[in-house]
Each structure stands twice: as structure tokens, then as C-alpha cells.
Length: 401
Image 1 (cartoon, rainbow, N blue to C red):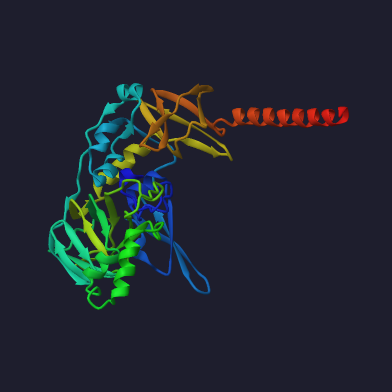
Image 2: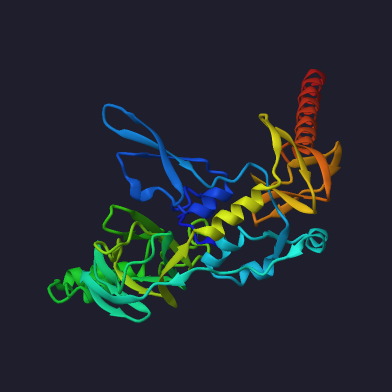
């Protein structure tokens, strides 16, 4: 999901989608449950349906008013090259307009789509250090300590017809460690000779990293706080691609911005120089275009859905060539059958399973079997057989001796 700038500190772990309405909808999120009335975390387009009181918390359920069906369809497609050339917020809009595919047959069958962008940058009045910040430059923040804060103030509140985002690209973090940190926060002068030598020795012989990421918290006055996890390069040659996987572009959804609360606050967990190529606050409307897109994708959808432990089935009728998108992570372990005939699945939207359908009515069935399971069982059986022969041979050998 790095294509969407989602915030994760490990490349294979996605904890949430920052309460972003479009991404949640594409994943068939029908309900959102929150505790203690933190309405700032509810995505756009959800309305309250119920709540439950416990001894310590109040849980409130919200229903997605624009929910996509499981098994929605596209009539148009976007090439992966087109998709990768878009900005992060343009990408999530594009997924509501056409399916991202690499399959040549599907691309030749579906209508080509040129994604439209309706988002707009918000005018920033000022960017100022509040505490613990030595310098605020056009493309660089110098942070001296933990919990340093920078305030970004807008010229005017944005419209209330969608979602607002903090967007930063090309973000890199150079930590202040050892001597550099001491000199930056002016404690070097007060250190003894022995303390200085110990710090210099530690810098010359760095140990295994104590931490691999740092966090920038992005908050608004309504109580919403998002977290961006930034990889920290170390002075040694230790490389952990699990934590540092080349991500430099981030998007964080913001809480409510209005006339009374017109400021976004950045809070830094680690000292250092934070450089970036671009920083924006962006408004993305989710009004009529979003509702229309949901209607088009829902017009032909999978019906009579039945879900099993490792299978699913349903039926669908389409009046034109469509790509059926199932919000199931793409894997070669899934086998698809259309009207009983095995059909090749298509990797859709960079991570889901898709099926190309011509005009007509279809019974759809998907079955999952762990890839290479049969080969693994054969190898395991052969290994146990070989082990048994070795044991038997050794016993006969001892009797002869």
C-alpha cells in the first residue's frame, strides 16, 4: 500500500488506512466502530447507527452511506504506468474511476480511462516552530528535541464537503546523534572532557540500532491525531529492509478544520534534520462525483454471495464487458471458475483479485489452496520415507555386527 502513502512502520503490516473514506470503501468497509465519542476519527460519509455503554467506555457504530458491494465492477481501466505517475491523492481518486491492471487482454477489452483530479491545495498562511525547533525553512525543519512542535496555519478554513490531508513527499530524516546532537542542543560546552571522549568513542563505534523508526504526529484541535512512521538511517552499515523500505512520500488524513480550528500541529519524537521536497495541505471533495462513482461501480455486482472457509461463490449479469473486482488479496492460491470453467485471475488495483467478464450471465466460484502445498506434502513424505529407510538400514547393520 505504499502506492497510497499509508502509514506503517513495517512493510508487510498495514494496521489501518488513516480513516480515509475511499480506501476503506474499496476494502468493503461497511461499518466503523469507535469508542468514547472520538468522532474526529470517523471517515467521511458514515452516519451513526447505534451505541453501547460499558463500565468504562461508550462504543458507537457508524454505517457507510456510500458502501460498495462485495464484488463491484469497472467498465474502464488504467495502466499501471499511468497510475504510478499520479500523486498519492490522485491515485485513490483514480481507483474510483477505473481498475488498475497490467493484463493486456483486459486492457484491450475495457475502456481506457484518463483519471480526473478534483482535489485542491489549501493556502497556508504560516509555518512556525512552537517549541524545540531551531529552524523552519522552505524544505527543511531542524528539530532539537523530543516532542518539538511546528504549527501550520491556514489562510481560511476548507470546505466541509470531503476530507483534508497533510501531504509530504521526499521526506528524509537525519538524526542528531552523539557529538552532533550535543553540539546542536548546546550541552557540549557544559560536558567534561571525559564525557566528550565517551561520546566521541560511541560515535566511532556504533552498536546495533536501538530504534529503526521515528514518528511525526499530525494533529488538529478536534482531538484527531495521526502518526507517520519515518525510517531512521544509522551511521553503521546495519540495514533492515523490514523497517526501511524506501518510503519517502506520506499522506495523513486530518481532523476537522474550521473557523475556530484552523491549525495543524506536527509533533516530532526524535531530534534531527527533516528534509522534504514538498509539503501541502490538500482538500479532496467527496460530493457528487464520489456518489456517482459508487453508483457506477455498484450497478453490476456479485449477487447471491456465499462465503466459505476457503471458498466463495455468487452470480452476476453484465450488459457490457466489465472487470469484477473482489476485495481479496491477490494470491496464486486462488483458483477462479466462471460457469464451471477455470478462468485466469487478474491482479487488480495492485493488490486485489479481478475477473474479466464479457456481456452475459455468470456463476462465479473461487477456491483457495495454499500454493505449493502438494509439492510440500510430496517432499515431506519422501523425507520421512528416506528417514525410515536410513533407520531400518542402521538396525540391520547393527545385527550383522
